[in-house]
Image 1: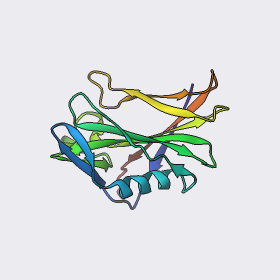
Image 2 (image 1 turned 90 degrees about the vertical axis):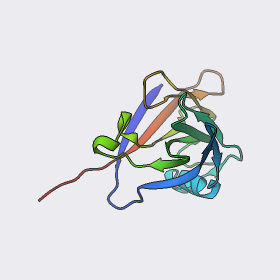
Image 3 (image 1 turned 180 degrees about the vertical axis):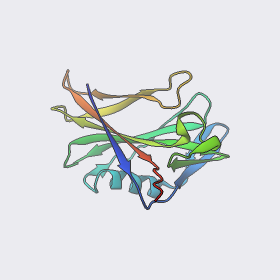
Image 4 (image 1 turned 45 degrees about the vertical axis):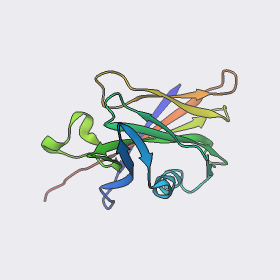
Length: 162
């Protein structure tokens, strides 16, 4: 598996996008349209998203990995997901924060996508390792032993003073 990492520098963006509510440690998606719009924007508006959105809570329910399948993407991406961060009883796609509020891992979200090479059906497989802020994410090919690539996108804040 080849892992490609990209860092997205964002000058103008919202700090967080509410995706759902957390009730008894479980995520209830209340902003399906916003989540799907985020995914489509990440896919450069190419392709169709699957009907089912899978949710995997962290052991402490302070983060949630949500992901779905993709068809018809020009870049051959066949799965996309994002890590949501819990704040109170709500779950957000969030930019990382700085200082004392950052928490482990900076507290921000990361977006994962799986791209076939030559596999046409790569899916996200993930676990939450103990003591780690980020999940372990793999792209698994559903067809024989073909290869999948993973693309991880994170936002970083850079303050430049003059």
